[in-house]
Image 1 (cartoon, rainbow, N blue to C red):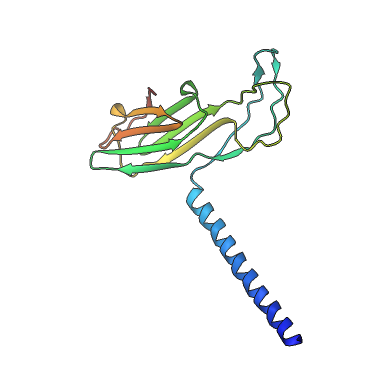
Image 2 (cartoon, rainbow, N blue to C red):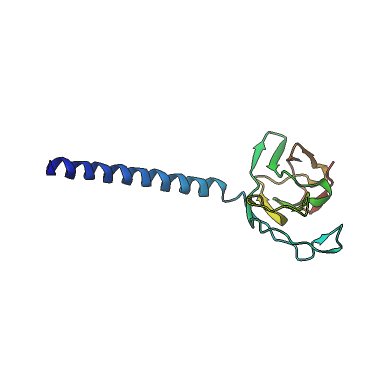
Length: 170
């Protein structure tokens, strides 16, 4: 009986050790794969409640969020797609400077009603900026950007404009 109890404890210990290894590996993979997409959101101090005319009582929200993206390269262009749900076109600025793509914007918090209490606040709000290195110099003068269904798509023809340019968002 004592031997079987010792063996059971040993088996449980091995199982827990393997489980912990899998969890740790999963976290390392998540951090490795998403660290570039992890974006800091800065809360604005001057958010004014439009109806009340006073500084809003912004519920505490996250300061970090993922702006997940992908970059595709063809013979003629580089296409960058970034998920930015909840961002208004007017609050988004895209700039190319050399071989860097810069995305700046603001995700605004809009309270539907003032007589409610938030119990979960997992979305990030505020001002953000993200820099994405491009694998090739691009022609910023002929770049195009559009925003549809929460996904920003920037098409950057290859070849080389070295000067920075603000890209209009359609």
